[in-house]
Amino acid sequence: MKFSPKRFRKMAKLKLPVLAAAVLGLGFLLGQSTRKGAVPQAEAATTAVPAHHADADEVILYSQLDNPFIPRKEINRQDQACNDMLRGHAMEPKVLADGTKEFDLTASAFTWQLYNTARMTVWGYNQQVPGPLIRLKVGDKVKFVFKNKLPQETTVHWHGLAVPNSEDGVPDITQKPVPPGGSHTYAFTVTSQMVGTHLYHTHFNDSFQMDMGLHGVLIVDPAKRPARPYDVEAIYEMGAFKIAGVDQENVFTLNGKAFPEAPVLDVPQGARVLLRLVNASAENQHVMHLHGYTFKVVALDGNPVERPYQANTVDLEPSQTADIAFTADNPGCWMFHCHILDHMINPGPQGEGNETTPANMGGLMTFIRVLPAGQVKDRYEAAGSLYSSPSCNRDL
Ligand SMILES: [Cu+2]
View 1: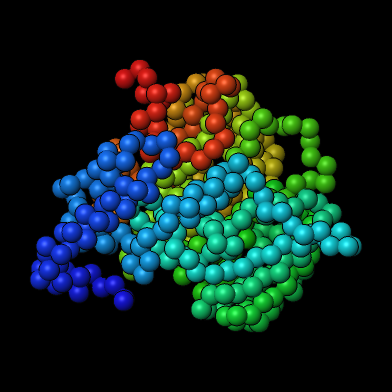
View 2: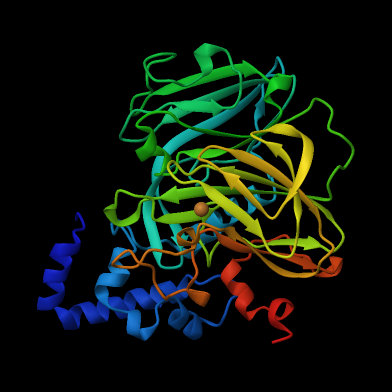
């Protein structure tokens, strides 16, 4: 059934008792899907949808309701994908007889949990948003076997990489767009021009397809990586979505998850940390700000900055990337967020934000937790769970 807010309001007037029961049911399911390690279930359900907010319009508007339920196992898989991206776990290629690294990339539609009360049908690569991390090194011969399982034509573009023109993914110029059900193979050799933090994305019906989720991070390493330049390397990709049929980006995500679900990064005190930041939003810039530190901007768009400069914020226009570095010498739970402040609000029914998340925050917001080495975890943890974490609020 196609969802229409108007039609729903009309139904709500007629069938209020039935709907109230349905909302309670949905509230229960939301409670069921609360993160491991978070607050107990009964309390979590209240946190996700407080009683005064549990009106039908609001709950329904957060989801495009073709498939609102995501099984626990699937949510765990999505969290794992988000965590893999954060910690730089890349997709494994098949190595062919001649040494070519072959990657399978399939675009399809699926239901994704953006945050605890918002799920939508997204389009993504290999069933995840962002797509899997692709990590290459100079000298690699690579092949991407791309399959299109979407209901629309598409292509893949390797942003910032000087590939041969035929591999550039521009529809009707360098290739025919890949039709629904079709496939296309991209092949190139990785050169030193390509070193650094980049992204790959669709180049067909761009502003629509990008914000459906067709993007991912691509990192190229030098042929020989320098010996342990950083103790911790992490990746945050900023994505954007247009949920509930609006025509402007209204949900912003870090590695596919908006606060309170955005992933926390734990780093041991004293570690040299590199954060690779990628703005994959189609339409919005992001001004990323880290509390508690002055960092160094060491690379922009994959290119080393000749004289790394110190800053507290770094500005990323759509498609730009930045590598920032700092030594984690200030212990604590430090907010890391976009300083365009309406990018840290999740949409409410009238578009003005909602009060269903801790501290009324959402979107591009998480924490970097600098801890004694023994307390560092490398598993997925949702940023919202830190409100009940003894390592963050012990002094309150
Ligand atoms: Cu922003």
